[in-house]
Amino acid sequence: MKIGVAMFCTDYSMAPGEIARAAEERGFDSFWAPEHSHIPLSRKSPFPSGGELPKPYYDVMDPFVVLTAAAAATKTLLVGTGVCLVVQRDPIQTAKLVASIDQVSGGRFLFGVGDGWNADEMANHGTAFETRHKLARERIEAMKAIWSKPKPEYRGEFVNFDAMMAWPKPVRKPWPPIYVGGAMPYGLRRALRYGDAWLPHRSRPAYPDVAEKIPEARRLMEEAGRDVPITIWGGRPELALLERDKGLGVERVIVSLPADGADTILPLLDTWAELVPKLM
Image 1 (cartoon, rainbow, N blue to C red):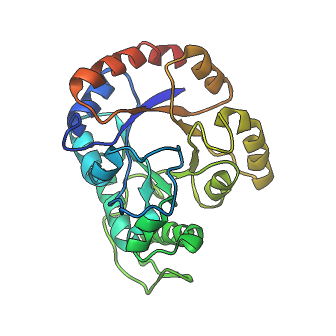
Image 2 (tube, rainbow, N blue to C red):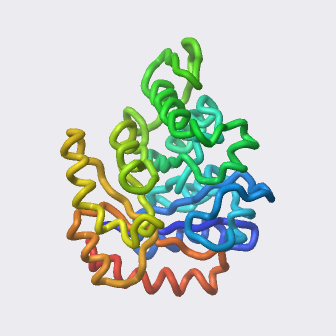
């Protein structure tokens, strides 16, 4: 099992190139960057983790810029969006972003996607909260066409375009792995429908630990005739817990680090680095 790290990179946190290089040196397999374009002052949607929204949600940098810096500073480290809010992004332009970062990283990009929880944020992008799941599916389907076809076109309820020329194409064929975020069971069902992997949070209001849901997830995969890898967001530095995840066939656990400087981050990475070789 692999261990990845994630951070809300801000203008006061450790720089993305620096943390990515430190993670690679310590044996982590991937670096993940979250996304929020902005945070409206109104609050129709409660924070899924409960309580007040943490400050880095307001301050986070664009994930594609962060990950390009991380890729440029490393040689083997995978870089991933955790997650890209595709319901708030134009699919044609986002397809070009994904293909471009996959090219400049040498095929090291992981496309983590999510449908979002902040209705106020979506509304500012012209996205209706009630139809966001169908919108996300159509946008991802449209991007797949752009990545994999020489003259792509797409017809849907929300996404429509005639045949076009759109380059570059991604290094990895037919496209970089699409990690679909979301809770059990609906997030997994979306991953099975149009993704390549499932990216759940460890804890959600519906369950204290997603690991307890993995046997049910395996049954859903069997029913769908697909077996997708599972990466869990929200690792804790407890070897017994991580060994249980590995025994359940989890592909990767992602450690979410605070948006802080090197004095705080490097000791945390060192603590985790002691566990990495024990899980390989």
